Length: 396
Ligand code: NAI
Ligand code: NA
Image (cartoon, rainbow, N blue to C red; front, top):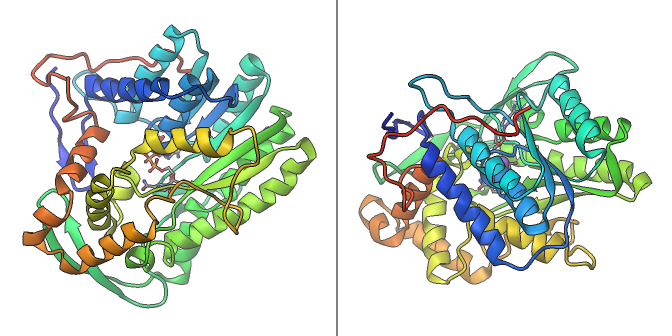
């Protein structure tokens, strides 16, 4: 079939298998262009199909020659209906990995459930024995807690008072003012239940109890902080509370891993266009201004550049892992540079519908958004008939 983007708000209902494949090939080529990383050899990535998780899987496999197991929740294709992007990404990655002689298998299902955790443990036991790196990179709007059966929905809201600021509809470029009511206590608790650290703890507890964590294993979860302009809706809002909870979990997990000489770490990453971040109000305007400034400064990075740098220059240098005063690994250092933030803050005040065309990188935002679903990728012929029924080689 010929596949076109069908965009509804923050999502695209279709995905292009060839475009997704090309994105994966580009990421693999990037990692291969860098020097080899003396990293983990058996890696589990939870949230492995898109964004930072996919980049972590690619960096592990093609940077360190690692065997990888990926866990994700993606929609398979059906006759005349495309799969979700993460499905096609994974199909392309596993084909490339297996062709390169690297073990690559995956599990599609709800990572929050006990069933998928057990399935993952069984696969590790059967094929790898143990893992030495566990990347936790889930982004989800809801979670069913397997212990209580309760389904929690997250909200992106400020805490305490109404938040009013600018936002952009990145499809139309219209800048408008948005007011978001503060979250209730219940909404805060639900958001923490979804995006906080409880599930990460459950994962590591289960993996450890099953004896599938190698001595010295490390686990890394991804977080975000960001600047003052977004803090009321991000770092000081409901999602920020959840990220605080994730940080607290890292300390508890760290204590529990001490017995095997292991470590739990938070990596604070840069703001990027992903399916998760496009849905957060105010963030797309910030990202379009940030992209403009970082590209001008020659320090722009996408998911793969961020994660390659995280592995190469932070996690696997052979020495101590550098952290901030709170013990977090930082690869948002370039985003948070004083000169970068000063420029973004200035542009923020000036940005309106007319001026954003010049001031911001809306075009880069839109391209990145379409790229997430395999559209607008250079080198892909979108007029071609393609087979939507792509299989994932290592799907268990
Ligand atoms: P993403 O939406 O690209 O990836 C989410 C992944 O989670 C996908 O592989 C998806 O299949 C998987 N997933 C979601 N629900 C699942 C479930 N129930 N069971 C199994 N798999 C499930 O998101 P992104 O942006 O890569 O986010 C990953 C982490 O990075 C999040 O913790 C996010 O807060 C963090 N982060 C994101 C930043 C950004 O600007 N996008 C910046 C810094 C951190
Ligand atoms: Na991810």
